[in-house]
Length: 298
Ligand code: PRT
Ligand code: ZN
Figure (cartoon, rainbow, N blue to C red):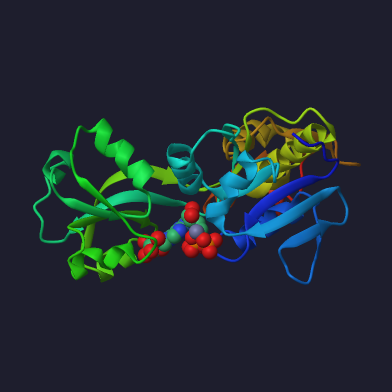
């Protein structure tokens, strides 16, 4: 493979994953100068550039070594792994789950069908854009059904009579309801992932990927975190600590001129509710602050 000294990340040009992916990269300290054709974005701070493409092209670009990493739905990555010719393609790996673009790939039948289980699908026609994942599920369940591969508008296939049921992505379920369909089996829980080759490049790009993964872990870890600050007297400390929402041990600091008082600082794994704050206050805390966490480097 050709050696490059800049890292290249593929991501969706325009779609559901575009905004959250850009936001995540920005939080990792990566900023880009968008070129006029908007396909290639040159990285300004770090030697990391972006290639903006259709999401379906991302796994192939990584496999062929055109890009080093990609931000793509697990559904697209797994479908590629199951269907692509593997001749000259490097095996791909999921490096990190990114926590956005959540959806599931599900079987959905017509509302009036009395569905008892996969066996009932034998001999039926299933419309999908995911023939690889569906085929694997049918094999696992020992069901002989015919797969009708469609590029889009899968949900209207039963109404048009081109299929009996569908296998498609579901998020809120609204599309299914609007088309008189009912979700029955979940084949895959999906979200956006950072995809890359199984083996890290051995040149500078390997170091850049490691740096990026560390920053990403910091961002992902603190995204939901809150820093809780409060004051308590020494004799109410135990009661206060017992009520703190989950997280590592709190840090205690003395308060100048008030030997009985302590300042407590705790990193909480998620949102801290008003109710939790009120309970902690009742136990003896005062001067409470809940702060969002922007960055963390352990
Ligand atoms: O142009 P390009 O090929 O890049 O875009 P695309 O149209 O293929 O992708 P896009 O932007 O629609 O989705 C990108 C990725 O977002 C998908 O590969 C999934 O990983 C993820 N994602 C998350 C979803 C959904 N949620 C989703 N709800 N992708 C599609 N949908 C569609 C689904 O196909 C169905 O038509 O939304 C409808 C269902 O939504 P609900 O809320 O009605 O259930
Ligand atoms: Zn697509």
